[in-house]
Amino acid sequence: MIECPTVVKSEIRTHYDLATPFYWLLWGPHIHHGLWHGNESPAVAQHQLIEAMIARAALKPGERVVDVGCGMGGSTVEMARHGCDVTGVTLSGVQRLWATCRAKMCGAGERTRFIRADAEKLELPAQSVDVVWSIECTEHLFDKGAFFRKAATWLRPGGRFAICAWLAGEEPLSAELRKQVFDVCEGFLCPSLATSSDYLGWFADAGLKDLQFVDWTAQVDRTWEICRQRVQRFGLPTLVGPINRNMRLFLDRFDAILTAYRSGAMRYGCLTGRLSAS
Image 1 (spheres, rainbow, N blue to C red):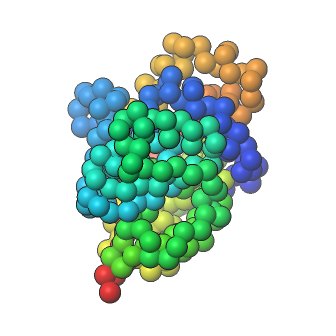
Image 2: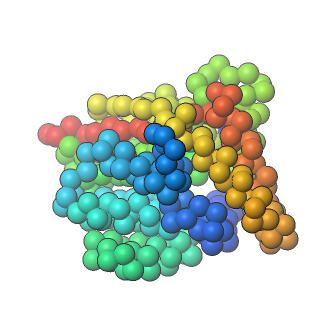
């Protein structure tokens, strides 16, 4: 695991409060990577990532899901359309309002609810949900292992974790590759990036079985080529630079994450595990 000790939680919240309109402009309703199989549009690729994760999570209609780091509610709404009852959790008050409005506009208001909460302090009743789901949020957690141990207590027997995450490459990494990961952590306000082995170890410590990891790096890195082009086209660095230093650093590090994926310093993938049914 590679850490960036300068990141603080209040800056993460401020980032998403300020950045949500820019995310919508830059990337649309889903603020996560696309999953490409060919030459699909970014919107289709983003939907494909959600559908692939739904399949790996084995979601079934009627199940209760907590979507940790729900952002603007894109995946929350998609799971509701699959018949699930979904609670979205976000650190940002702006995102909570945005997601609530989006769900109602999409006709998913009855199957969704959104709360503003720090996921690391969130308390839910024991054995109250079927799936703990998170797309590209656990990078912002400060004690990932403690979160997974707590979240496992929310699961009913047979319940599952389904996580998509930015990952550090497996050790050993050279000093140059570690610097690439650090630059991403700093620019994207991640207190740490962990390896797939770290995640699977935390899952095991939380009592999960049937652990699986699928590497989607080569199918998602196009995301950052497209984002870089759109940033340049819209002139976003000039627009947001005077507003917030972290936002300017965030935009400046798009090349860093693309480089890290292609050098092997970083990976991207889906991790799943389940509790015993008895």
